[in-house]
Image (cartoon, rainbow, N blue to C red):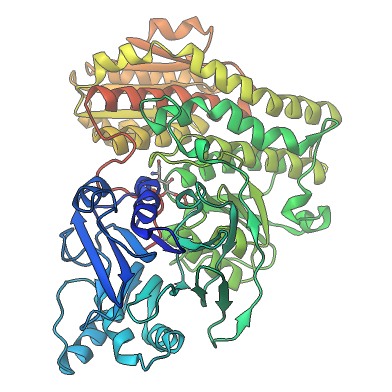
Length: 608
Ligand code: M6R
């Protein structure tokens, strides 16, 4: 999704802005641009393609003087990814430059109104209306122009605004979408996320919807929608810049796969004290848990897959009915929700538009809401009644790995904690499950160590055009995630199927060209999976089996084998996904794909 950076200080702005853009590249984009105010005018350079193209056009920013500016990476929505459509956009007489993340839903009406007033548009974007409105409303009062402009806009937007006549002053506005202020010494910043800022400051302010901020080198002032100054808390970012760099790995995705043992440990370990799980941070009391008669877990993409795993585990342990639902569906469904419903919203970024909308919808109907989120201070974290942070650290690769496994870890923690609070577990089972949770970090490491041969399997199988992932119950949930991992980074078409469903239609697609990845990590369903494997083999398919370490039965069934270490069956989906992440990674690498930034994808989907 689009990335925004703003800087005002005494240093040359453009190199700092370009550095910020580079750190936001992981979000996904297709063009970039920068504008600085200098000597009463705005200098602007834009480039389609990468930030490297923009750096080339500006000698890494050195060609633009000026100590105050804004910059942007654009993920095209309105208009192709051309130089002209790239942000910033200038007002008619070049007085204002604006960068924007989001969608202005009433832009067509605003554009018609402005064109009727004689303004000639240069781009096809929705954003350009903002630049023209700013100039129209500017009467020497920068803040009033920003507020009057924002009041005309409908939709979701984060704006960064620069004015040629206001040296050293920037405004930014947030109305749905992420925006963070960075507080420096004699310099201040805004950005779409902390990754862009962490090399320069660790003191940040998380903006809320309806707020605008004024930045000068010395001061940051936040206002509400009415223009009244408001006090905001300053947060301290705990991770450092190395955490957002590759650390010797060829790709962020591989680094993040390898970080999973530590990330899972950071998520689980601090919440277990003296053999007891403590999730007081959720704000849910035993009494409130007892009042819940339904849980809905929601999210998008991999977060939804984590929700499906969570459904199996929570239902099994807590005996509360659980629905797992895609946020994009839940938000438009007339769901049966009331004060006895607990919504669990799962999101790595905490900024996914559909998940936010589904939360708002469910909360308006009375649901209590717990968020499982990685990014501290994100919109979802602030919207929910309680938060259980995953502690994965920054995740840069578009394909989530440690973000997903830490979501599983958090859902498992919740399931065991909730079951114990509801009196559903005897002491022995509780301590068995707590030990099972504590074992997960070393099992994640074991899953990595057991599957180093996967790169050779990828050499063999990377030429597939279509493949299937099959499994049952939690293995089916893991199959969905394994399939998504492969398709998003290798562009190979794959489908996840509940193994028992194959014969209801899909088996028609199975032939001798097909590779079927069969997940067989549920002991009680192993024999059922063997039957499904035999069905596809009878049609000539090749089989890559995924089984529990030491289970020799799989050798009789599969052409090649991946392994997951043995563990508490309810938690098997966590180590089990790691070989599938590695498989996807090495297949994509064999195929020469852009692993960290796959085509058409953004890390954080902040528009619907
Ligand atoms: O930040 P979120 O967890 O809310 O993101 C949800 C999905 O967009 C995300 O999981 C996406 O499916 C990933 N690219 C999967 O690897």
